Length: 113
Length: 111
Image 1: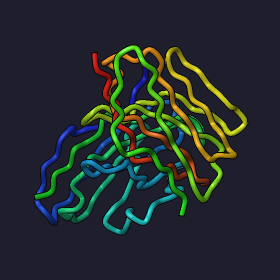
Image 2: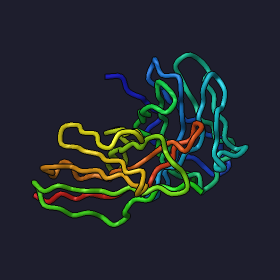
Image 3: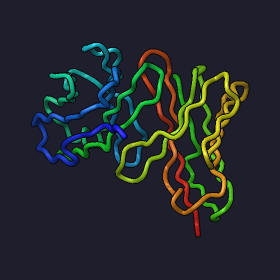
Image 4: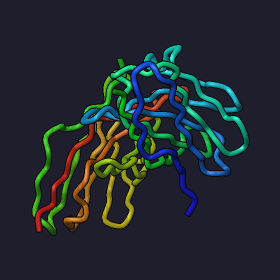
């Protein structure tokens, strides 16, 4: 069964460093998403991406964040200058159509020291 | 603002019983609601989607209802098993491309 994959599974970085989180969505899906989940809290929407551009973003997704689909398979989330409060699980998801089921990857656990 | 609320208290039930989890939404009318399962340290796994014009949806031991009058969805697991122990998340689109999630309800099924 097709699945969303994410790399790395864990990332430790120093405050102020840039990190890139990678995702490979399900191949025939057209809509891509990033979410984060701070430990013990709810899953929070960050951004959605369709037709090679951001379709919607939350207030969390400020200028420190960017997303890119550099080729036909990868979807990346970049955090330019990490802060301690960026420590969280980051989930990528994809869906075939808008307002259809989103399939989530296993997540990247980011720890900012 | 648009909100989804789930009972934040953990639900403890005996194996074989039916677990019922509640999801309430406020300040919007979702076209559909989704239920996911999340195990510790893992990504949400899709279980069921129910649309506003569907009153009930079933999949094996799972059943979801959607009451637009009460602004509520109920998620039932019949003949529960210890392997059903997890956190269950309710989610929906709020319009556009954004999905919001409830905080989830932790279910513990005792053997």
